Image (cartoon, one colour):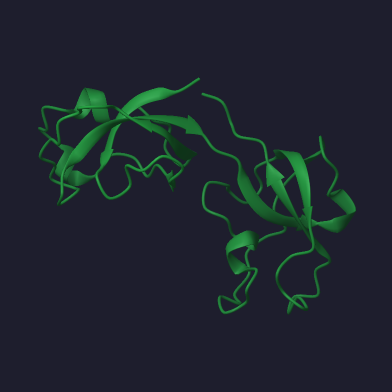
Amino acid sequence: MSTLTLLGTRLAEPGQEFVYRGEADACEGCPYRDQCLTLTEGRRYRVDAVRENASTLDCGVHDTGVVAVEVVPAGVRANVASSSAYAGSNVSLEGPCPHTDCPSHELCEPQGVEFGEDRRIETVVGDPPHDFCALDRDLTTVEFEAQEE
């Protein structure tokens, strides 16, 4: 089910994904707070639709303003231990990785998933983008199910 919210015009494109980071200091006193702060902090969302003929509203956070959009919870692609990589199973991330130059780093530390948080695997994608893991982890890329509101 989609949720109506306000989103910066630069992100307001169908299919665009983002992680909601919560209220910013500039939100204090904003007349649009009740329409804007409607999502769950730390959760990943995908823009489902931009409201037609929606006005662009001034915003203290987004320099080009905000518009009304419909968003849905989005799945998260991640690397998990190969021994646990089965569709339908619940797993958590392997842990932090200091190797930020690795092509898999964003999958080992994906936005929208916390370390120690169990997530259900929707599909197994396959081999991760790296040739070898500097931490000697045997990893498989998966897609976690979207977390419903």
